[in-house]
Amino acid sequence: MMSAKIYTKKEELLNLIKILDENQIDGVVKLIYNNNNGIGSTLDVEFDFNLNGRLVTVRANVTDESNW
Image (tube, rainbow, N blue to C red; front, side):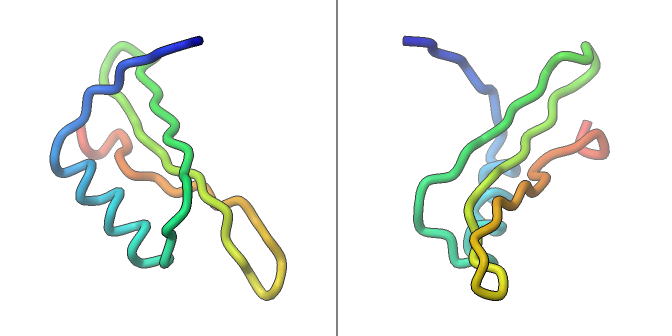
C-alpha cells in the first residue's frame, strides 16, 4: 500500500470545501498534489459531474502559483 503526505493550510481546505459546495459534491473526490518544481506546491481536485445528462470528470484548481 502506498502512502503520501500532503501539507496544507486551512485556507486550502476552506477553498476545497467551497468548490465542493458550489458544485453540490457529496461523494468521493481525488486530490492531486504537485510539489515537483522546488518553489511551491499546487493542489487540484477532481470529481465526477453531471453536465447536461453526461457524466464528466471536472478538475478544479484549489491552490496554484498565485498562492505562493
